[in-house]
Image 1 (cartoon, rainbow, N blue to C red):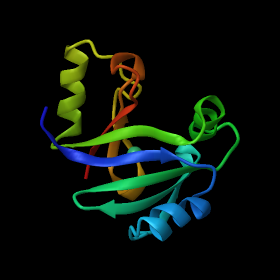
Image 2: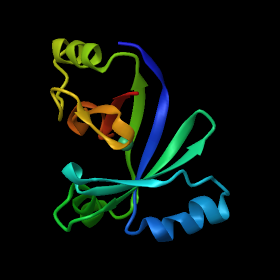
Image 3: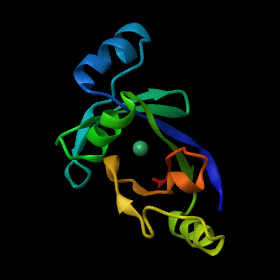
Length: 133
Ligand code: ZN
């Protein structure tokens, strides 16, 4: 598996609108636009930072994964995403190594990227996303 870089940090927020006040208003990051991913009951907003991005995640439903995360832990960093050269190859390698996965096959995330999550039980508690764009 070849990891190319940290693609983005996923930050769970109650409100992207309020989140913009800090990430754009205070830190001066450019707001690149938002996108709703219905399958994951989430609205995402991207703020590019050098080679990577900050991704704000706001739940669109009370039972969505981001709403459940905030219920349990409060707002904050929810996942770290690594960009890989070939996501299918990466998932095959992880399966061979016995790593517990949330997604056995890639699904389509924001921006049409192919994404897959590793299980936090396999990663010292960090929700790791692989993405290929
Ligand atoms: Zn992400």
